[in-house]
Length: 468
Ligand code: ADQ
Image (tube, rainbow, N blue to C red; front, side, top):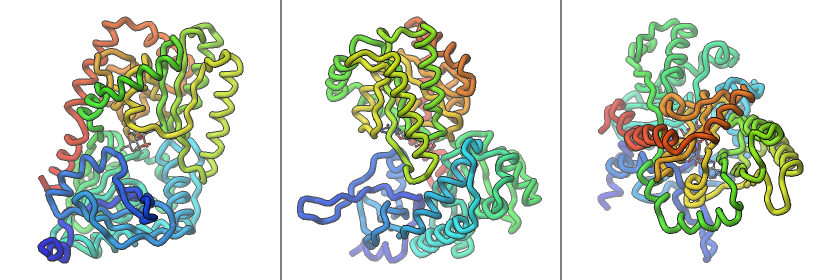
């Protein structure tokens, strides 16, 4: 009863994200049940959601009518409905075929479609309305990512009493690219409705602040800008991270040990190069395969001694460029295996599905070289997971300069994925690195990843939002 009363007053801490932190499944009696989906963000925000009267507003996936709000794991879950058309225009369209490529260096041409924009506005308004209804007087609302950039302003208009934070998980582009967006001022103004805007890296925060001057005529300083209505908005970088200790513990577990034996016997007596990415054109999988193929062809690597394990679950398959990428990657893998594989021993072991954390931890532990080679990436958590899993303090992380994580993991073998020859040299150097050299680099990176874990990220950003 006490809870009901509290609920009527609304939530004092609200998270808004495109997706809910739960997935639905049908139990043995045919009823729909919910279980928490794995992910660092929900783990990091959980203490605050539990401490306060917490709620999470988001889309459950799918287009069937969502259930009424319910409680799960100590928080209130508020599902947002998306119709088929919403999914096509707001999500697959404006979010993933306009903003995603534009914010990642326009490496795939962004599509500017006016009806997609209209739907983006409409769905952002739906999220803002739901938050306005749900938030307690003077509460805090923490909005996530590029799908919801208009919500801060929309929510402020409805509820000037709440504190609003926004965090962008992907890069924020420089003026030269952002200028292409026909609705650029609307997006800037949308974001500026927040009290705090967080980015992954300093450069992204800088890009945003510069644009407040160029497009809105404001006068930003190092970390703040005063909006047109006189509010001070804090703009800073908050590099996101992982639950490092959890990964370390998992990597030492008996289940992982068991899988390691299994994998090693399946992969033969060869050293392992590993890639783990969502199948996305930003991740540089094609360049990695090209460099690997050339190294086999040049004799820099011997196919008897090496295998590339590439885990790449398909994502966003209904967006055209993703379907195309999948074909290209699969053709290249087939080509490499045709040329360099032997019966039962492929040169590339391609796994086109998602693995669970135990399986990933086992792969991280047996990978001599981990290749994280995005063309552009807001942060990239896979490289941090590799570092946290290297319980013996050795191993080689090859990391693109264009991942946000490269700002922190300076001891990695850094590379430019556009420079195939350069990348081959770096792989070769890492391949030949002594145990001592590996440990020197890895121990510094481990210290960093353990100190700056996702709990540290959450406490830093929530502290600056004024809730501790
Ligand atoms: P993503 O682009 O999805 O995230 P990333 O940070 O590397 O990229 O991965 C997120 C998670 O997915 C990781 O925990 C990883 O283990 C998992 N994952 C990746 N491949 C997997 C596989 N094959 N099987 C199972 N799990 C897999 C966006 C931004 C990033 C930013 C994050 C968080 O693009 O730059 O780091 O958000 O802010």
